[in-house]
Amino acid sequence: MAMKMKAAIFLEPGRIILGEKPVPDVGPLDALLRITTTTICGTDVHILKGEYPVARGLTVGHEPVGIIEKLGSAVAGYREGQRVIAGAITPSGTSNASLCGFHSQCGGAHDHGWKAMGGWRFGNTIDGAQAEYLLVPDAMANLSPVPEGLTDEQVLMCPDILSTGFSGAESGRIRIGDTVAIFAQGPIGLCATAGARLMGATTIIAVDTVPERLAIARTMGADHVVDFSKIDPVDEIRRITDGRGVDVSIEALGRQATFEAALRVLRPGGTLSSLGVYSEDLRIPIDAFSAGLGDNRIVTTLCPGGKERMRRLMDVVASGRVDTGALVTHRFALDDIESAYELFANQRDGVLKVAIRP
Image (cartoon, rainbow, N blue to C red; front, side):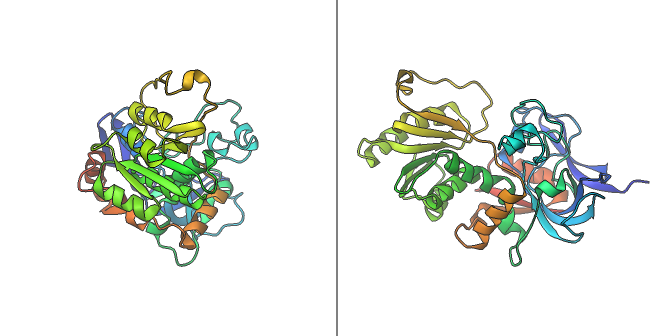
């Protein structure tokens, strides 16, 4: 009889429950991880609410930290018992998308199409990480050993939040001496703030309304914080920049209002780097877009994954240049995952990220 494991399972919009599933079988290129710590992402809340469609019966979650329990017969370069992470995005390394340099868009070894978000498989097209065990496909492209001396919680943000936030700064092509505005200081916005500092921005403006988040934004690198509930952020950013506007704005929420504000604060020739997951159509106002003549770039990014990306992010954490410790505000056992969702989805009790332990 197949071994059983506990898992957080999507049943229908509004219902993610703790249930039981068989422990997955391991194919030649796969690895089975025993999960030691995982977390809930804002995207999982979109799934819970039915705003992002996934199959009923799917195990959710895409942020794994764990120990290799079993390796596929063709997997080389790893050993059972090794502590590893895998990115939220799991490229095969051999698809058209991977070989074009867009690993995030790689849906697997036989990916001939250009289905956007193809590389996001965990908790989207295959069973995810909020479980006792996780099957990692294309293990040799995706498993990254955790450096000695780093705790699970120190690397928990690397699979998604840190990778996504940093990629917002990277895609925006921030340069030394830039002025950057980051709209929303949830976990991803906070990591974008840290990424902007690492890339050399010297005036970083963080926009949110939650006092605790604005305080953490300062520790992550913000030079100015703007509470949008008290003041129009576009006016305030114009004031801070003496009317010049910002070189790069980063949208880290996924709403019309933040997208539009991020467009309005750009200098001519500036870049809007969009990270939000949008659940309805966006409008681009003609004045904010300078009628199409502003030399602006609007660029979108899906969290980069793969083992080399994970290695780099863990090196950033190990070097002490970024500390994501403040982002983990709550801890739950996997048995209490339903309570964790209730807290996280309703953004109660100052929650930023939760650590989930089987």
